[in-house]
Every structure is written in C-alpha cells, then in structure tokens.
Length: 313
Image 1: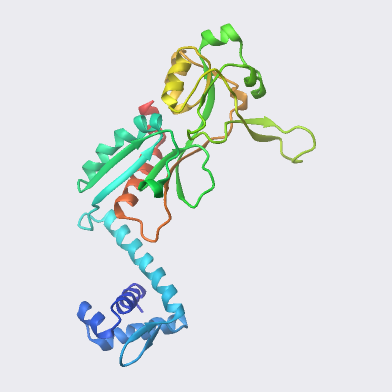
Image 2 (image 1 turned 180 degrees about the vertical axis):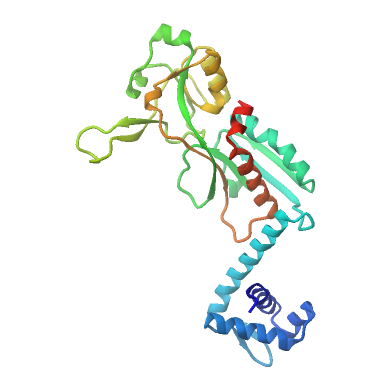
C-alpha cells in the first residue's frame, strides 16, 4: 500500500463527501478509490468512514485521523517546496517583530536577502523592546533574545546568547568594581524599564551555599539592580554605558567590539550565567505558512554558523 497516496485519497473523499467526486478529481475509477480506503482501514485496524449509497460520513476515529493527515500532507508539500526549484513559491505578507538593538544588527540586514530569495513575499519588520502580543497584534513571528516566559507560543532556538556586565574603565576607576553580584545593589546600574522584555532581571551563576541542592555546586540567580536612569530601548543603555554613566548587562554580540578595543571592561565575569537563547517564536497552528517556515529556516541557517557572529560584530 502506498501510504501517502492512501492518505491523499482519504482526505479527498472526506472533504468531498463522495467516492465518485474524489475519484473524478483524481482521474481514477471510484472502485480504485474504494480499494485504497479499504486497504488503509485494514492497515490501521479501525473504521474511518461510514459509507452508504446516499453519503459518506466520518467516524470518530476518522475525524481525528483527517486532521493528522491534513497536517502531514501540508508538511510534505512544504518540504517539497523548500527543496524543489519547480515547487510551490512562497507568497503573501510576513509580519515580524524583534528587539530594537538586536533587530537593527541581526534581523533588518537579513530581510532584503530573504526578499530577494522569495520576491513574492512582502515583509513588515517591527523593532521594539516591548514584549509584543503576537496574536492580538497580528504578527506572524517574533525574534526574542533571552529567557522566554511560559506561554502557548511555539519557540525554535536558533543560537546561544551570552550576557555579561560591562562598564567603562573610567567608571570603574571612579566608583570601583563589584566583586560579587550582590554588590550591584550599591552601584549605578543601567536597566531596561519595566515594560521592556527583560522580565526576570540580570542572571548570574553563583556557588550554592548551605545544604541546599546537595551535589549541585552552582545555581543561577536573578537580581534586579537599580540606578538613576532606565530606558525601554537597549541601544540607549548601551550608549549610556559607553558614556560612563553606569554598569550595564548586555549581550556579547552587542559589546564584543568595545571590549576588544578597551572601551568597555567586563565585570563579574566569573559569575556570568550560562547562555540563554535566541528564538523564533510563533503561534501554534495546524499548518505553518510556507513563507513563515522558510523565514525560520533562513534565520536558523544564518545564526547557526559561528562565523556569522564574528563577521557582524
């Protein structure tokens, strides 16, 4: 039995409600369509359809199997289209959102390249450090950096993201440097405002104290330092840090160049938390549009190469 052909025949009959109509659409005799369904039901060991002379109806098992078959056939079509030059062409409009700083450096430059590969897809890019409600605001996909809050959204991890505290040499000379994470509470720290995406605070890996978690030597904690200035835009925090206004907790992709040039100095490096992720996030759905699937694969391909990050910092 050709399973894929059997699945296609079952879906066609279920949607058209008639063996004759499904057979006509495929250009075969109704008897052939009937034999395919018989073989499929025998293989599965369940009745999928109730056939009478007047109509065809789905059984309970058939209704559930129809959804699975439709999803499987859509995945097959998408897979074929993504590798076949003569396959389906992605089209339609794609709405994307990303954090402002990361989006300017690592999403916006890729959009024209993606469009050149898929000219029938139009793209709108929104850059904001606010956590956008994808469903309510009509976005297809968000690129998010850091820990993800629990939600019903689907996430695909595309790369690691490491953060560390940094400050200018002049700031550290004037105010000193923290030696443990808790020292940050008495320093001028530059933080994202409460409506931005850094929901849990700054993360650090510290030794486990006391008898908690026997056998575990370290744990990750989260702190919420304060300071005289905060902002919802990460790029502004980066600029304030470079100007010597305080200590900032930034991603390595953002500050690596300044660290290498000596403009910024890492702080509390021994307490840096393990990397979190850079994710593509989208709403749960039965059939992922081809344009969205291709966009996610496109990002994964670029972000998955280690030399990409060195080339753009």
